[in-house]
Image (cartoon, rainbow, N blue to C red; front, top):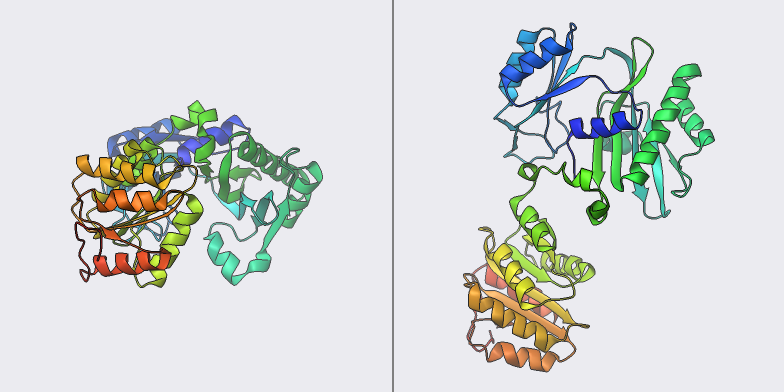
Length: 397
């Protein structure tokens, strides 16, 4: 789950990380009033959307008066913001953060993610802050310094001091930067983050180290431990199908293709997407319905897939292990009694009681395309999406 910059900064502030004073607004009038309340001669007006690259897309503006703040907010609120992460359609800006401006001498990057290969979180810092860190990684990989740390102990004083030194800081400024990094590590661990970053962390003209941006992504699987973080969820920023899938308890990611996939098991779901692509098709989603493919879950999955106007065919790829194939087949038949099938559906069953499961589907009377194996399922799904293959009530094609 992603949170907005202003929400991340609220968490930063609670952990002692210096951030500019700011006020969240939903209209140009509110933004102008916020600038008056904040005071000063420089302001930052920042669109609050779950996407990077806001600056290049026009979602971050500096203003030198309260009237300029109003103008900047007026140009953002209610309008689409297009960045390299939003796609060409952009996302509608509903909220802007008005902050006191923070003139700076230098800017840095600091971030923490999980290094799966090392099985440990890693702090990354760079003197190349204020630009896309992916670009730095591609063009100047040596400019990024990494240090792993033990999640049971947090980021040690010596490691924080070394990282601050790598940023070219010394004295009190290095101490402040080190403390900020240690606070980030505590947030990452205590709030179950999957990513946390500041880009940029700046050295202000007053000699203070300040986080003028903030990004936090949270581990969805750990949200049950954090009711206060669940309340930060902004469903308007999420793909509607992904939000609906979360309500059903599915692991779902919307993709750009036209073959809707219903699979039990994350590994099998990824392999299904891969083999569809290999067969020349394009998956519309990643969908893991989990091990209990009962009628209710299958029905909800079909509603999700068939509600996507891009889907031209559905591929059901189920392995019957703990839940046997005949139980799964009965679940599919029950689901199809309440969810009208509007596109061809390819079904591949394998595992325990597979013969019984296939028989149940053949005798159901529903027009289905039966697949013999994994590769056959992918080929038939691609052909059906292209209109080259039609189902029969016997299940053969």
